[in-house]
Length: 98
Ligand SMILES: [Ca+2]
Ligand SMILES: [Ca+2]
Image (cartoon, rainbow, N blue to C red; front, side, top):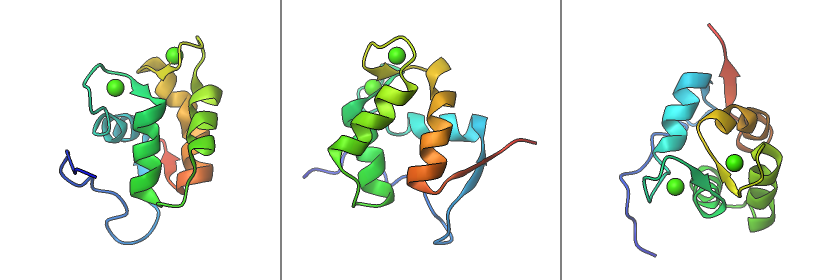
């Protein structure tokens, strides 16, 4: 398994992160390995693998499906905010607004 990206800065203190929605979007973009501006199911799977390693394809598929408002199979920038609920539940990331 080739590591293509520099390690994403997740859980820097070993605790679930707090980030704003803007930071969350920036963070997600680190996982956009084909740089098309959207997060595919495959890319979301990588997010899950990096954050916990114990998450399944099924869960990543579910994350994409629940956030994918226009049902094209990808999370675009507008739809990323729909991932917030998924992120807080499955990834332990707290999205704060300030
Ligand atoms: Ca992508
Ligand atoms: Ca979509």
